[in-house]
Length: 72
Image 1 (cartoon, helix red, strand yellow):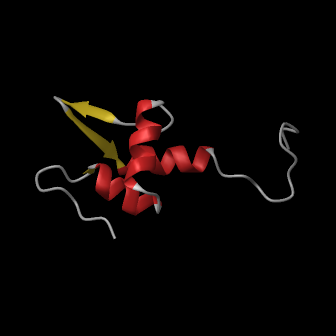
Image 2 (image 1 turned 90 degrees about the vertical axis):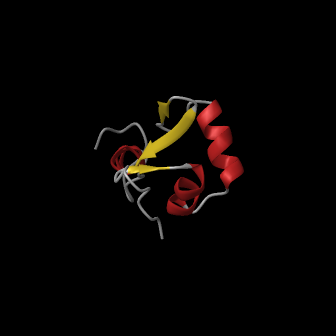
């Protein structure tokens, strides 16, 4: 699974993020450029915080048996 980047315990690079989410690197690049996934710019590098990705996933989780937009 994902390994912590040395010196940056909660940050992942694009490859690690793709592996963590089970997606292709190309999809992560595309989603980043479309601002569909939370990311951090560190100089010219793009990093992803595991906690932010987990929250992002939680917000997009569809609850079984609940109709979209019903608020229940």
